Image (tube, rainbow, N blue to C red; front, top):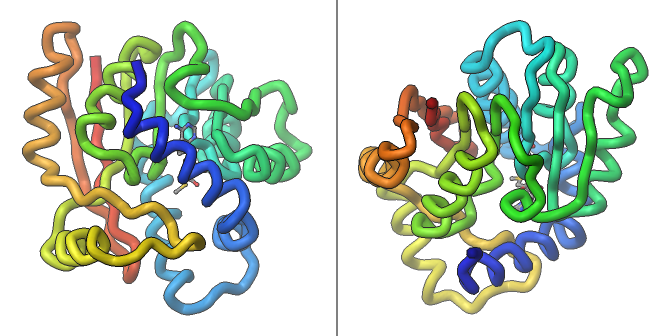
Length: 233
Ligand SMILES: C[S@@+](CC[C@H](N)C(=O)[O-])C[C@H]1O[C@@H](n2cnc3c(N)ncnc32)[C@H](O)[C@@H]1O
């Protein structure tokens, strides 16, 4: 069910997050000092994580949650702190190792089950909530629609994910990037999205199954820009 384009992009992302950028990503997601530019990204990502968690019940006791593309595990750990039973999965094994090491001692170690694998192909049968923070931003819209449909087959109540909203600057960078030779150490490009259009497409595609798009909000801090999207049952 995964398109060949999805599989190619997933492999690029695995190489990038598991090897090329693993150390930088580990630093960005820690409290270690970072450059001023990265500090804006860190602040934006903190705000995005809080926003997504705020769209879930404050008390997650007795609820199950999938963190799809969990990276170093910040959202998974926070959801567990709120009582959720978390299934966290990422293709980058080195980041999942870091996430395991970052599991706080005061949390029940069984409250987050970390897995290395594909977030669309190795999901649990059912979970109350599925969250994919910044893990779908590199995939093309057609693949994201298919991905959300797949996540909807797992989620019982809500799917939260993010996309990079189309802005003139991001659109231009993306266009220019298509004609540039790719540097091996560069992150696969981010796919800018017209959010209204995406929400309409999601409603058309998932409405029949009882899902509808809900809240959406843009988080922008310096070099970080991402749009949170809610899809609920
Ligand atoms: C920008 S990072 C975000 C990580 C985490 N959600 C966070 O916000 O800290 C994107 C993550 O998605 C993971 N990823 C991308 N495609 C994936 C896939 N198909 N299955 C599982 N993980 C994936 C990457 O390995 C990377 O860790």
